[in-house]
Length: 312
Image (cartoon, rainbow, N blue to C red; front, side):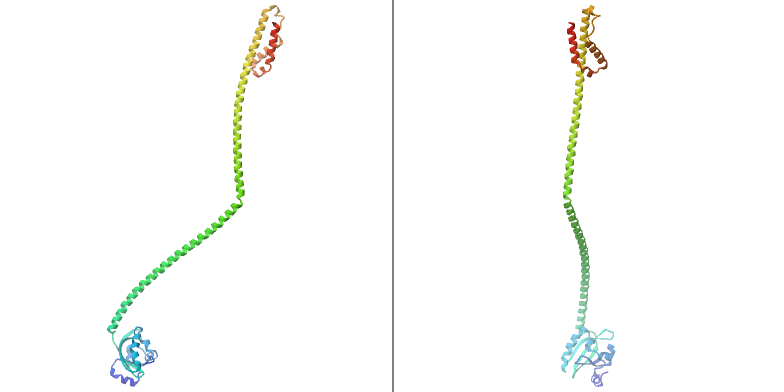
């Protein structure tokens, strides 16, 4: 508790809150009203630096106001907030007096001063504006983060697709290289096969052309043979007719000779050659074998001519 001497010295002050501060920064005495107003226990106040119980925003001002009193003379009046036990703050009007190695302070609860109210208003507005700015900034940061994540996701997908494409390209390159190697290895075989195919195709075409020409030649020859056969048959027919006419002429002459020499009719015989010729003619007329008739035409004609000469 406060010393009796200090309390007696400050008794004229009335019901205000009274405290004593040393130059080391601690409370040395506090009044009963001080404890009741703020709700702290005495030992809690005495065992902690007095700056612990001053609002952080007011601490600098309190130190500036009390600094001139450390030399033992002077006084100061100012406003500052003290922390309550319920963690709230109470505005106090400070009256500080310099003592020997101590500072005596009388505090009275009051609302914030005009400048403090203005400062609080500005602080509130600033805090609101700052909050709005912070909110917008946080939203922008979140949006940027979302865009960054989306961009990163797109980049990851693009990178994966690029890796897949590169893998496919490398695989295709290997396959193409292998195909080129195989094609190079069997290129000679392919060329030889192509040449053989082309050669066989040319040979087949030549053979087909030769067969066609041969067929045409055979057909032409067959036509010629048919024409020759027709010509031969026509010549044979003409020769037979001529031979028949000759034989009949010879017979006619023979009959005339017989008619001119009747006494020799019974004694005269037909030459064997004439009889043979007449028989062949009759037979050929029946059989119409032109080829047989053509065999001894010259001989028959020669015999007929000789026989005619003998009779004359």
